[in-house]
Image (tube, rainbow, N blue to C red; front, top):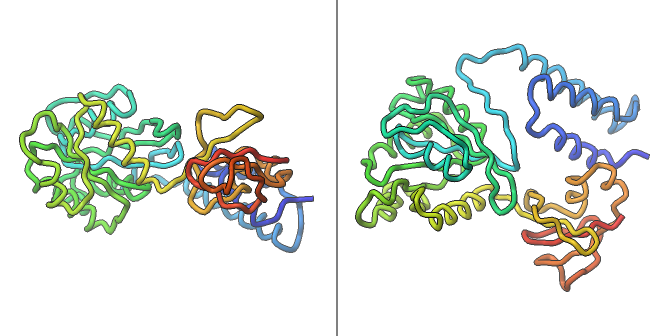
Amino acid sequence: MPMPHRTQMQVIKRRLVGKEGTERIRELHSILADLPDYRNGPYADIRKWVHNEIDRARVRAKIVHRDSIAVRREGAAQIALVGAPNAGKSSLLQALSEIQIKTGDYAFTTLRPIAALTRIGGVLVQLVEIPGLIGGASDGRGDGRALLGVLRNADAALYCHAATAPLSELETVRGEIAAAGIDRPALLAVTKLDEADGDVVNLAAAAAGLRAVGVSILDDDSLGRLRDELWGMTGLIRVYLRRGRSVEPDPVALTPASTVEDVAASIHGELLETCRGARVWGPSARFAGQQVGRHHLVADGDVIEILA
């Protein structure tokens, strides 16, 4: 007996997250092979949707866009680091992810987007450094359209502005992004704070109209505060899986309003089919170990034991 068709679509879309090109086509064919061969009804519609996705994926794989740069998505969310040249993006990305990047105290050290995975509260999040944006970027100057396309596909933006740099640089970057019609949840990182004097964080925040956090790559506490702010921008919640008496250290990231069913589906499709509810410890439970049904809404920080 197949699972409910709405649940099946959720499972299919999860399987396709982060897959592009031939990998996406291969996964779509695998999904098609697993579907029941109904000629009518919701499952027939799902098969038609999968066939259409295969056709679209083949077309995308053959086209090279002059004004695009592909960054393969990984992790639970993607946050783009944007700013003027020499705003401290590379050093910050290196400090947050431990990736080794060529850095220099001069503009245009980074020429292509650089992606790196980092764990924030146990969840893998992808950070993507976008090379410095300059005036005219939205019109294509300095590969601006392609670079802005990377930001357009991200879930959120971290504006980087050096504490010692003129605010006009940040205003130029924000103006180009606005001209491109891009609107993402955003945060301002005032970088190189160890080189500055005075209350530059409040000054930058007031000028830009953004929530701001000061950060120095030499100060672990400031990096920790930035990590907390970045997690808040993802809009995701974290739940922890309990198996027997042990709780897995790394949480599962979910969208708000997720249910026990969504938790089960994130583990395995077969578990979703057999799931009859869960025991819950945490904010969404009335008491520790409360037994709940499949449609119970989970909350950030919950510990979940799936009952099958």
